[in-house]
Length: 189
Length: 189
Image (cartoon, rainbow over all chains, first blue to last red; front, side, top):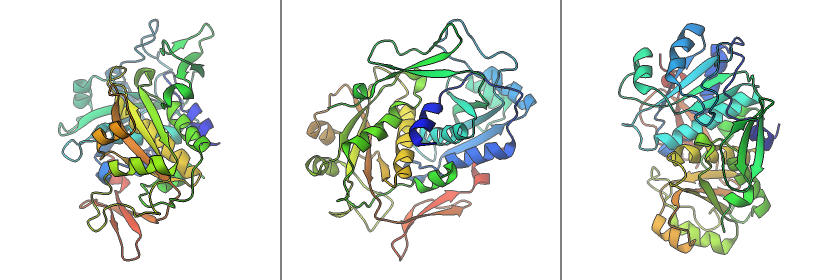
């Protein structure tokens, strides 16, 4: 698959085949893609916590706020929830560029996941106090994002647009649409 | 090439075959990978400025600070400077998550570049006032990073380490070494 097709395929997935488990080995391989990616000054401030079994997943799920732009949908129902999570932590004592580094690592992980047919969503709207408590996270870390992962149970389509409302939406056939500004809209000068 | 090999190959390159030009078409294709990547709430706050011709490149070059960790090397000499640049801007009126979005887009672009044998470096240490002036950048944008791009003129090796000094360095054979924490060091719990 060429890079353009892979990037197009790497959409934010919010409904999963929850019961198609993802092995711990596979998730470690995904984290490895993040680990080997660039970080500012090579300081490597990111740390990863993994979950891929139902009990731990069920403790992480309540920390997540889903798809603020979808008015008629609050969260995936049972059976369509993520099969695994990677919680990404940053140590602010190590680097001032946690968000850049996190974005870089997330994209390596999600491209690698998509390559294997695994979908994911970068979730930043989190109940961080709850998550810190339920996962017993050392408070020296900032909880940056949580990656929700699983085999996709939804179809997503990219729409090319020139301007206006960029909110994603679901159509009558339950297809999720993602409007993207055309290339000439984002290249200046 | 599988994703692990591609991520390993996508290192921060700082010396280039400056005279091997990169076409505008090719750079637009790289920006397109950033454009189609995820952004927080799909708000798409990033904008891109491109340079791939010598005169404009020579105006961008003085804005960049290179490789703070290399004591004996200040910057690439003439002939080893980038053949192209992508300056990434963010509109803070559109989104509060510019740094995450920028990291995501940068990694799509640099993986896509590496796939074609093009190397790059995400440069955050910039003289932003100078750059804004020389490129006539609207001050509503934040200048986030500049991607330096070109065909690599250096070899890079990843070293697996457990802890300690993570500074990159060049060995006696002029090979650039990048120490990376082992997987078990970055996965917690």
